[in-house]
Amino acid sequence: MKEHSRTGAGMMNQRRMSFAGYLAAIVGSALLLSGCGDRSVSGSYVSHNGNQADLLQVTETPDHRFTGTLRHAALTSDGTLSSSTSNVSGSVDGTNITLTVLATPLPIGQNFAGMATRSGIDLTVPDGAQTGVQHFTKGQPSDFDEAVAKLDKMGQAIIAARQHGQRADQMNRQVNALTDSLNRFVDNAKHHIDRLPRAKAYYDHAVTFEQAKLKRAQRLQAIGNEVAQGQAGVIVGQMGVDKAQISIVDDELDRVRNEAAAAENGLNARIDQWRGTCLDGAAAVKAADVIPDMGSCKGLTRAVSAYNAVLPTLHNALAAAGQARTQGHTRLTAIWTTANSVQ
Image (cartoon, rainbow, N blue to C red; front, side, top):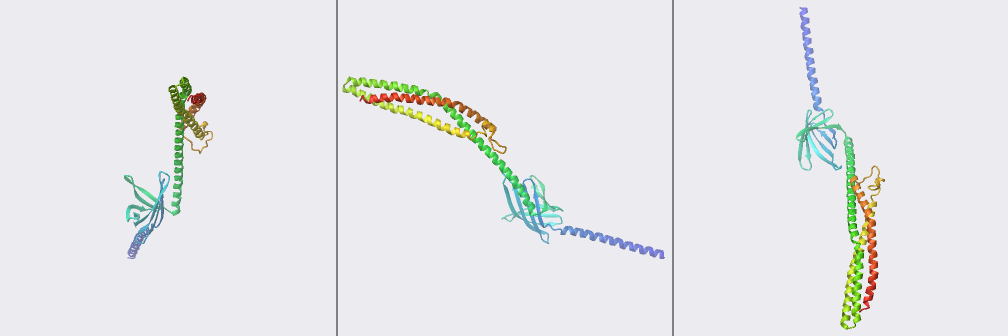
């Protein structure tokens, strides 16, 4: 009987211990679950990738709802930063999160689902035709500021590269414009070189023509009657018209000479701007300098060579035409002076 009593008591003790252990396990599990549910999502969270950064700041209330703000900064293709701030609200159910981003000032929101993790918050976001996960890491506003500073630095590099390219494009346009101007000058110079030698023939013909008129007027005057003298006066009057016509040719020669000189001076100044960078082997170029493209510089080099080659011939043609005019006018002046005495 004593043996049986001891055995019964042991079984009772074992049952009590098993029940106590079971109860402890239940309580422990409840406490663990309670600990997960009570974990607050209040705080600051930062998300950033290659070209954007976000700062999510939320405050959770005892009823597991939260409100806050979402700051967004993005690097655009032109190197500038775009930024925005939106109000957010949402709720927490265990580890599940529902977040609504409000489009200020309209009370219209975009909803996102997500999960609270040990390191932050994962939100499911649209990714083209599919969805992706944007991870927000628990951090500080300074982490967001640091990410934005990096984006800004990247943007400055993009802006500098774009400005470099724009400056190079501008230089290419300037070089190409100068090349076109030089080529036009060469074409015009060749045209003048072909025509200017005609100036000597023109003035020689004018002298011969006016000399013949003077002789006819002198013969008519020598006859002595009024009719003949009247005819002589008409011829002398025609010579005055001829003088006006010849002055038109004089003006044209002056125009050609002045325009050629002005164009040459302007082109020389523009050519000098590219010496050491686009011409003469780019001897003055430094590593960080912006210079025109090689193709544009080669085109300019050829144009400058043709320009320099045509200048001496043009100068000689202009000088010869000027000399022909001077000599022609010396003889014409003598003829016209004599003709004035015929009347």
